[in-house]
Length: 134
Image (tube, rainbow, N blue to C red; front, top):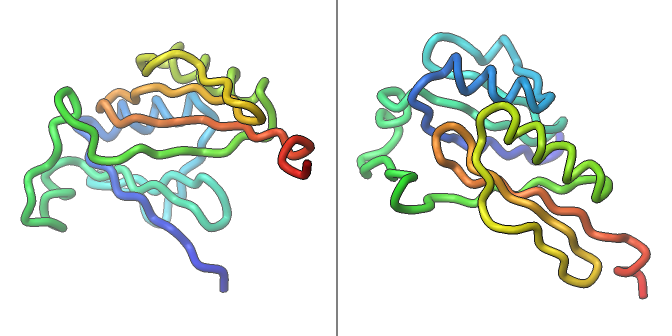
């Protein structure tokens, strides 16, 4: 079995969060979804657990980050093309997300970032495979 990653993020309103990420095209594994948590499927081995803040707090003794003041994590997802980066970023903004900085063009890399409804920063990145081979 390949190694899997489960990113756990606190959310204030689980229904709003699942609606937001559903609008971006993500699906949820109902087997691991209830009134306290939703399991967002990114790929066969990558999942994001959206946890209501009180439930999230039960897993840590540390304070939950105030995303209006600090970043606790940067989640970066790869894309298959520049167009896919733009499409997903625009869907995020249309669903209520906020832009985070200007688009990045750095050699073979192109990226954009947005803040979700709870202020978590998501980065979308495309790397031109032809440029990487040279």
